[in-house]
Length: 224
Image (cartoon, rainbow, N blue to C red):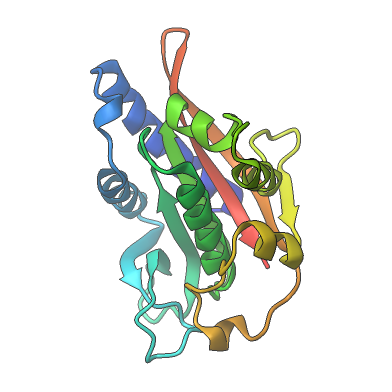
């Protein structure tokens, strides 16, 4: 399985699950914990990889308590290393958007600094209702210039169309708009990094009911 195919399966599985809930008029009841359980179940059901949750990346020091949401492990006995590291975000419609953007950027740094091999799937997966995603990406902050600059920087990092999939922020921009963005990575793994953070949108799946888009699932590859 290629990294793109894996990402497409992740997005399709979560998008289909969410679409079924939307058809039952339950799209506003979905939480991040439920989405994470569904993602783990779906990865396991594919029988290509073994998911593990809340685990320490292999290149992080053994004394750290910091963890990644989902590790993607090999199924064969004796398989070494991680095939992928995944952080999942599924924000509600009523969240504080600036804090949520900060957390998503921190997640992208965490997976970028998680050692993977073979598939090298260093994914941030973002899902939610159309209203929740619109508030993160598109709703301006006319009375709050700092938040508006953060929103613009966030959109520059996370492209949402496959026609223009790549995003990037310099270290200076990260520090300006997402202070302490590396605090959730052990400093020994971070090791004074001061370059650019890059993302690439691999796939997006919309959950629809008729002509109405109820929400979306995005998968980005994150690279330091």
